[in-house]
Image 1: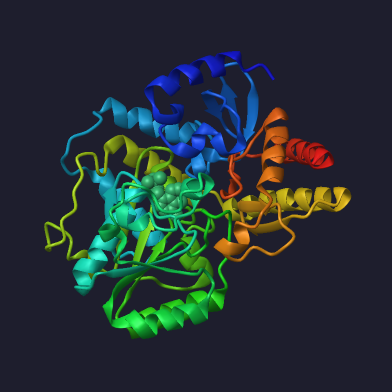
Image 2: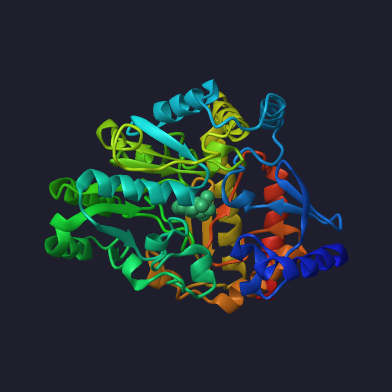
Length: 428
Ligand code: PMP
């Protein structure tokens, strides 16, 4: 594969940006390669500076559920931009996006738009502390909720890939109020609540964990978490930045029938533009400024262009009858392709999948939490990644990220991917 132009640009970028990138995993460090520099995307495909074409299973790490440059979304962005890109004043479209979200996720009676998932999670925690008057929060090992100080403790995703579960630069004092629990461990949770229950403001969780690779929740564990939090006056925050509008229109909370107090969103609700949101019970959200004493603000929050992309994305999903069934079919075909190749070549893998989200762990054991995820064979992943990229399949350069399928993927993409998987597994 010719990658002369990409290498040249990337090498130059390394002089100006740490690792040549604006978000760490993009640098491909953990797989020991230099990343292709992307020129454009269309549908399920990405094109780099050297005109190489890739079938994209990163999908901008989730937002591009309709594929790249989807015509309706691009038209909405153009129309909004022509009317001005930012006012710092209310617009009607913000109401429309808020209505669409609250209608899809009824536990969100009121919400606030922000510009990233990080901001949304950080602000939800502040709201929970303000509402309860308590300081402690609980997060789960391997769950990622953005890079704000208090949440960067045993976080998965890029931090896990880079082997820095706890970031330097975070004073111990900032994370002292963050307790860490084990995902899917109901007993551990009971213990934690026995000890600290009355001091905990909130538990934040990815209801389907997608930042230590994809790890599915034990439904009973989630139900117990709901009961425990309720009984102790602790707010339950679902971080649905990845799962919102991904696993079903109403997110994981709809899929499992569990209602959190607060929900954190991002990615899909911005249709590829910077948007996040947090919201939940009206009583809690009424604590947010200017109604209440919890301060939170943003110059570009509810940005007109970003909001237009979000509205168009959600409306397109809503209007497409077979949307989630089709995504599930594509996800299932991909899962089958991995299982067949693993059986044929005797490769130990463990697959977790929900609809269009999928992780293939190079491991002979079932992956149910952080400690089982990190037992995966990272050397094997590295080889597999490089063989796939050679064959034009663009997946996240980390064992600890999920694969995303979009509505723009077609059967031909899956067939080509299947051939690449066979090729890669035959060489592992
Ligand atoms: N929460 C979850 C579950 C995420 O996956 C992410 C990002 N991958 C975030 C929060 C942070 O979102 P952002 O990168 O938009 O700040």
